[in-house]
Length: 314
Image (cartoon, rainbow, N blue to C red; front, side):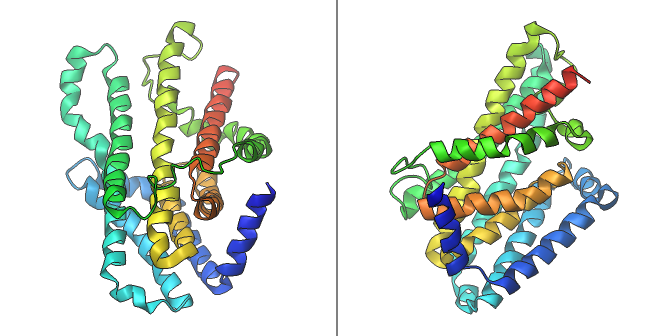
């Protein structure tokens, strides 16, 4: 834990700029307010997805915070050279495109749903399972291909166990446990979690032991998807961009990360900035994403567990 605190101090000393932080807080604060005011984000998402422009909708959603965050970085840190660095600009567009593809994957599985109804006993459940696996691959494959040609790190972005110590991350989970479980019992979280029950789509009963294997399998797939999230945000967006902006990659990544939480409980969206920033600092200085995977998957499963308990004991 002492090493982690050292990372945070080093980041604050090397990179923290009060004006830039205030600017970014205002941008994200206003964005969150308008996204959740009168459920505006969900209204826009439902109107513009599923009819052929899903990729474009998500691309616009993600390019806005990423460019605004990097724009603020350029101004406050006087890095105007980035505006003419075509490799940096192309990498920015590529990163947004990859995650926009991931967010659009579920739409590409829809044409197969009718045939799945004829083949599978629980077609909507398996549709969601295959969609989540598709989202995982939509990140892992292109990012790994880019790493193969980039080779700015010896192992794919952050997948290194060199000098990795697991104990401090379990300590972080233990500290966060009461807060995570506390959130899991709120009404806002109850509307979205547990995800395994939500995507059971009425097929399965939480209190039926025979259905437990379906819930457990989906929880496994749910956890695997977070590996791709960490690989993209704390690996690719930090390590690949570090050659251009160093630790300046952390806050734009956190801003991008906030926007992928729109539509989820607003407390989760707000906290994603702080969690994303902290994990970004740790991955930048340690060059490892394994700790982030442990924390992220651990929190996700704890929230699921808390929500399951809440559903079973209303």
